Amino acid sequence: MSENQPLPAQEILDAVVVQRLRLTHPWPAPYLFGLLRRAGLWMQLSRLPSTLVRPVQQRLSRWMPPLRGLATALGRWGPEVDLIHADDSSWDGLFLAAASAARRYRKPLVVRPLMHLGDAWVRAHYQMAHQVSVYREAAVVLALSKREAEGYTALGVSPKRIHIIRMGVEPDLPIPPEALNSATFRRQYSIDGPFVGFLGANTYDKGAFTLVEAVMQLNLEGVPLDLVCAGPQAEGLEAFLARQPSEVQAVIRERVHVLGIVDETTKHRLLGACSLFALPSQVDTFGIVLLEAWLHSKPVIGANAGGIPDLVEHEKTGLLVPFGDAGALAVAIRRLLAEPGFAARMGSAGHQLVQHYTWDQTYQTLLEAYRVALTGTS
Image (tube, rainbow, N blue to C red; front, side):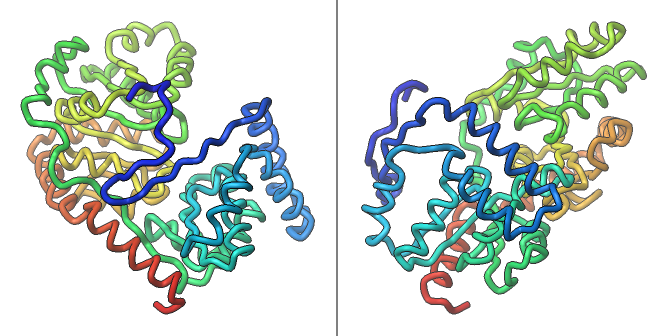
């Protein structure tokens, strides 16, 4: 299906009936969303009492983003459903509308806020007073990791209502082995030696900028190494690269490859061809791309931040480094390149571990959470 072709209003996927709503974004929604979110964050970071902040944030959320037809759709389907599930609290308008419908029609509310666990500024995006009130009233709160669960407990959510639902992958590679063809991938991007793979938003918080600095540092120290980054927001990384000193621009042009958004086949070709995979992010509550790297038996490096330490065991299934520390990241990369036996053992351990992170297990955990929400018993 082409990018511009709309999805069908209704279809059946794996025996599940999916009903899509024809919602529109009235102008100037794209601009208002950013402005109003900053206003809400300013109020959150101020010392104003929550009793004042919460109702204002709730009113602002109606335009974050405004979606025509949402109230009508919830009014039509709300009385018929067994429970309401709301995902991603950063989309305030949808998240609070779901919570409001659950109250109105007396339906159990299940929320998966996807709360990022970075620095204070990052956390504030998911801990605003109006969002926290929804977490506390939900029948079940789904967390992706133990650390995220602890974050909700600190916000006053009862531990009994928090369920950890781990993400998963299909245990077998989604593309045939002959489609990987590492040599072809390397020739396509003129990569002769080792390279580090990165998947995710090409941003500072995801660790892409720090990874570039570490790779440049190693090249300047005489360790020839390429970096291949794939994912959205590539323009931010490209702007960061353009700001680097002139003495490293030659290294950047030769060694740093920014692919932007890629298809599934290209993603797995990248993972199959890379020497190691790095996700030095402070905002990943789980880090599903680490599971995908382990499918290819690749050694991984993650930041000792967010939910990544719940997934990666240091020096057993990967290496952990402080977020934002390019020097420590360079040391970890150098070690994996210099100790291929150690790197191979970690990649093998990761491959064994990933067999326990499947979508079937995720599905069973979700069903159990729904059962608890519907029956009120654990």
